[in-house]
Length: 240
Image (cartoon, rainbow, N blue to C red; front, side, top):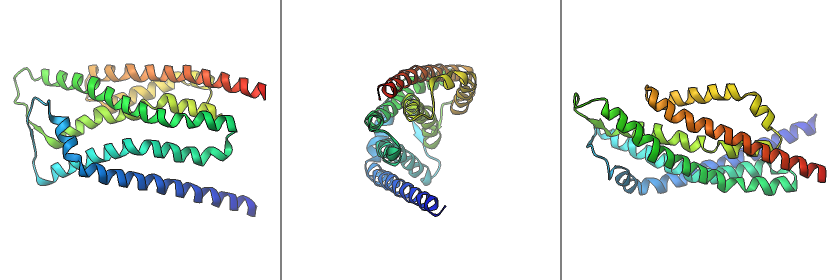
């Protein structure tokens, strides 16, 4: 019993060390991002057709904080993935360690692809659609806070959602998931994805459809990749 408690304390100490490293990386990248946040801001608004306004001195500071946070999150993902891998590495076989280590750059790449998909595809489509609904009946007036809140809602969730295939591949490789379980819960997964789409998009049907379709496609890709990982894992087990 005492050895079990010692092992548990050791796991918590290891987890605490990993979390501190991840948090430290985020803080460092946040500071660096905040130094260059004006450049990020000007790049994001350079092609904007409307003029942004602020209602108070704190608005622009809030926007800078959000932009710096998003940049820091993107940069922290490889470190978070690597620290997670180090934490679970003792429980993995040598072959599993090599395979799962390759997922770390994939997580970062898919996060950036998801952000780009949201920014270059979903955001302009939804933004222009909502603007067209005014039909010259209203004067377009955007506050900086509202605009960037909308922008973040249309982009940041896709960064995380696009990592779904790699996460499922990793969980399959360590034995937590398998493709048959994913197929069994498919209808529940679809329901959750629809709820996510409704939550992160404005309340209109077109936006929901534009988001639901790629999310379902990602899930099906994840199931297919899980099958590949699962079969390869079984072949390795048989060979051993």
